[in-house]
Image (cartoon, rainbow, N blue to C red; front, side, top):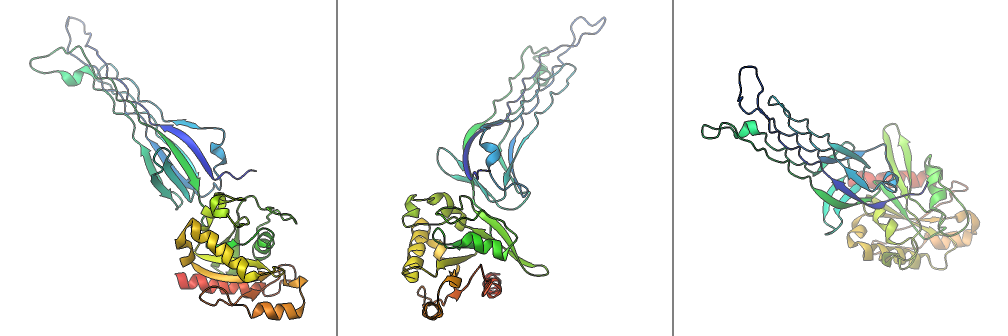
Length: 331
């Protein structure tokens, strides 16, 4: 299934029903008074965050979403039925933006969170509402007010505690399948991961956290190269960044600095997050190389890397607990 994380749709609230012009028709009462009822209110358009959804795929083929119109006013002062509200379910982590101005209208992060996007048009008054001492038989009624229409952009940002960041083939998918129950597609070619994968890492009873396997970044990603900005946005909501560097890299420190640079160009605030560095695939290097890698320092904070192997499971348990400790500091 293709991952859809950004789409554009048109929404419209219902228009109000017109009021009714009607007069009583009673035996022996040749000219009865006004009795036209009011029109019903048009339906609202409401977005609701749904934890059961994880993509915007439902909006790929349907682009127009219209709420129900209000019904006409009736005879005998009967009000027209209000139009039903249109409920649009979206995944948790969805931004609703004005397509014309790019203004963020809502950020729906929690399950059940609602956003009233458009209000339905007000129903028109029937002629019964216009009766008066000087006008006892009004022969007019109000039309219903039109609904509102808006083109919006829906943009999904995954909500995860930890974002695994690295170049293509750094071993992110293999790692997430090792530390969680996630089963991402894994192969030995660039950009295997075309969608972000989520996994739940269990530490102990009632102690767990979510990890997002962010598709591989390359130099120039912030300008849209490779998978580019499409997936950089998913790193924004994470609390901890796990930089994954290949043990066979010619310069692990340069790789780390390039990844940091791409994140900083996209959003400088991302570098304020807690960071951890792991060097992957140590099962394919010799002991001398391992010792050299262990001595490396990353960032101005002089972060020492943890050497891991998702194949032999070396230091995987240590990695899980170190990340948990970083998340505890964030609480």
